[in-house]
Length: 225
Image 1: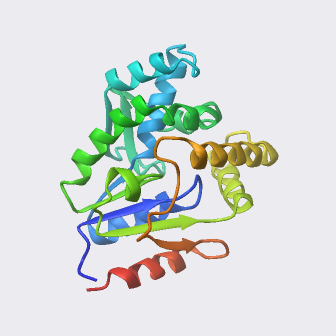
Image 2: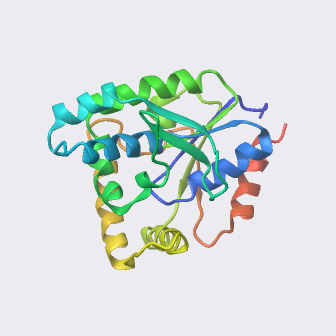
């Protein structure tokens, strides 16, 4: 296929899509934009402000008013971007377990998704972008030139998330992570607004048992001019 101007990456939590998309963006010189950080940032703000996650109106109001900025990484601590909430660096705060536990509920609210989708489309339609999320190919950028749906078993994804936390020196319980991921998968795939699913024209890749270079090779073979 011709060199794609917009590449959409979708898939469940910890399927490897952010890692793969980031590596691909570096090799192509494209903007890497993981839209999940926006929903995590909203969730962090909601929790930090003491707004009950069950309060849809309150959560939506936070999403409509908060200023979220995603910028190139300013520190060499394995981050792929800086994530700022009203000017505050929350790059690692939004990766904590409490945010992980509630982000699916927050992102399921129609008002939250509407607020975030508008910003995501503005960035994506500028082109030369690799955008990562759960509804990029189906809702945010259905006009994407190439759509990848990256998946892996829930057990493999839980193990990856556990190792990520351990590598950062944080306490982690594999069984708790596995159960939380199963709950998140259920919420993500069954929500009424923009549920997690592969676009009809997406290329599906299962990363179980594959190394990052092997997955990258599969994708690179799709975009060779």
